[in-house]
Amino acid sequence: MKTLVCILLLLETFVFVVQKVDGQSPDIYAELKELTSTVTALETRLRATEKAADELKKKNDDREIAFSAGLMESGTGDVGPSDTNITLIYKKVFTNTGNAYNPITGVFTAPVKGAYVFEFSVYHFGQLIPAGGYLMKNGQHVAMAYAKQDQGALNSSKGVVLILEVGDRIYVNLWSNSRIFDNQNHHNTFSGYMLFPLK
Image 1 (cartoon, rainbow, N blue to C red):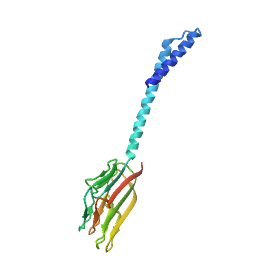
Image 2: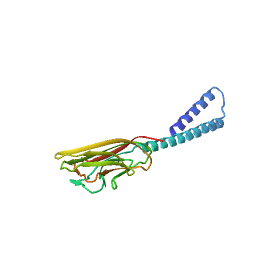
Image 3: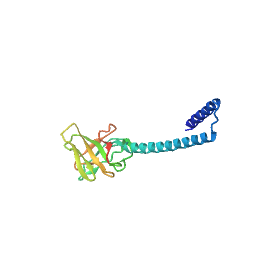
Image 4: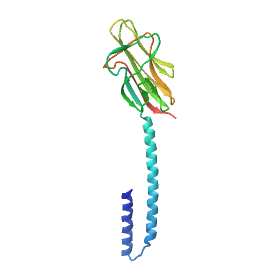
């Protein structure tokens, strides 16, 4: 803004000198008044532009929603089996842009209405005990990843696109009577991100 004012003052001085050389005597006060009016109008436009830029940045910040987490932060171990479904808490947070995923509860809460992608996986060693997990939305079953075999590693994953309202809750339940195993390789993960916002 200071540069703009300096340029305008230099131009005004140039006009004054040219007119003086031509024998004209300009009304310097009228010229300065017009210059002040121009600078004031430019300052007003600049403030409006800065405000619009701030609002656009806030909207773009709202769109930056992505998370990815592994089941165990450290160590090695099993989760399950249990007689009831267990909400899995993915403690090893790789990414949590927008802070919509809570690593204490294992729940993602939609901060913005939009279309979201979610993916999760279940992994275990086959011992006639299945590995199974449900993707849940507000307490309702959406999709299941499931695997069972007698021996060897078993793995299943699932991905869905969901339309969420503000406050919708997404999480993964371990299926009752199933088991999953995790270690430093993070075999069991839960991830999601917003594709685009909706009105």
